[in-house]
Amino acid sequence: MDSLKIADRIFNSRLLVGTGKFASCRIMAEALEASGTEIVTVALRRVDIENKDDDMLSAIDRERYLLLPNTSGARTADEAVRLSKLARAATGINWVKLEVTPDPNYLLPDPVETLKAAEILIKDGFVVLPYINADPILARKLEDAGTATVMPLASPIGSNQGLKTREALEIIIEQANVPVVVDAGLGLPSHAADAMEIGADAVLVNTAIATADDPVEMARSFKLAVQAGRMAYNSGPAAAGKKASASSPLTGFLTDL
Amino acid sequence: MNVLKINGTEKTFDSELPDTLAALLEQLSVNAETVVAEVDGRIIERSGFDKTELHSGQAIELVRFVPGG
Image 1: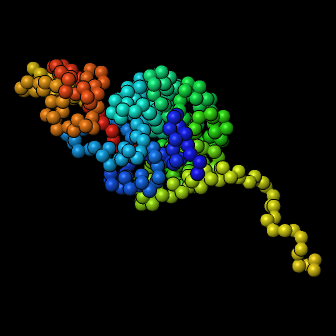
Image 2 (image 1 turned 60 degrees about the vertical axis):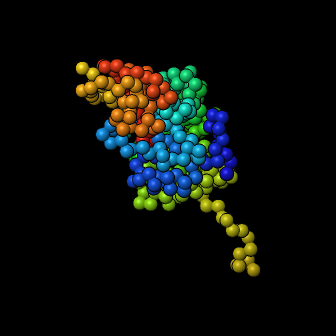
Image 3 (image 1 turned 90 degrees about the vertical axis):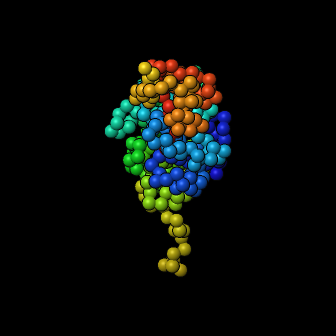
């Protein structure tokens, strides 16, 4: 499979994996390994002073995976910028998955605040990977502002509905000059393959892996689906048509003998 | 009285305040290796924990990475 370049880094895997919702750190670590991922997302939260034994970072091999902090919980650009700066202080790297989601029911991203935060963060030297609705104009504006990717949603976070935004995703992919990472709502390996077949550069999966009965095997399934989808895209899929087109020769039938 | 607002909750210290941020984390049994701090809105990097003196009335945020997508 061909490699993926985001900002100045090259990756061999096109599957980004979120670390939320795993039953244990051990299962998370095994699933990350099975997925073949090279980029994993984490969130930033207050330390629970009453329960300090909540350090999950030790289960993630920092030599092996690029830690991509998200700004989940941010409802405004200012909150996202603050979280990004804290994350940079924590990781020592300047990559951030920008999320501004003021709506608690559907966790849909706020386009105005996301663009505003992206502009501030890019000026401050961040490599910004913004989570957005599948809006081609917004994607273009973010790319023009200097984001490293765009990350349009397939369907709402954790909903496992697959590519509900297909037409808009296709337009984003057609127009983008930065990698398009389809994020959120991919519930099955076939959804991930679907996104890759229409030309997404990568996908991000969390819930579908973490909450499967066997997260490790599901992680492996997504790895294979992403590879298959990418290979299919690169192979130039045959066109779809309404009428049948015989696969076998239409001459030399027995009646002709 | 010596008071610090830690992660939104006021904490009163009967005796002296810990001298530094590093001393506070030790007193709270929080592993400093995994934490980032803000004191009155200013980010303190880990290397600065033992140089950051604390004063009554300050607001301190202690954050760390947690699982997330």
